Length: 90
Image (cartoon, rainbow, N blue to C red; front, top):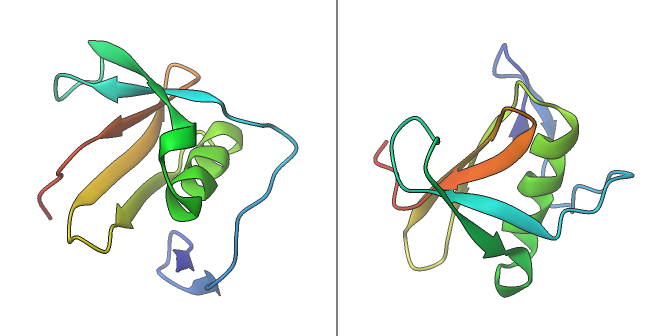
């Protein structure tokens, strides 16, 4: 599900594709996203990679991906790098 800043539905059920390919992102080790561990995105699924791509071209975007196992990953753009926080509480 993709929502705009007014929580209006933009789209759902599709893969987000952009002109930029994201091969690696940062796994945040702190709340600010300043301590990162490199993460190869090939181990992640389509939903995760879609949000990585969206955040790479829309830096003000914050994405949440809910996995089938119930874990939530928050994804954003920090200083022009895509970063995620694992097991985010909402």
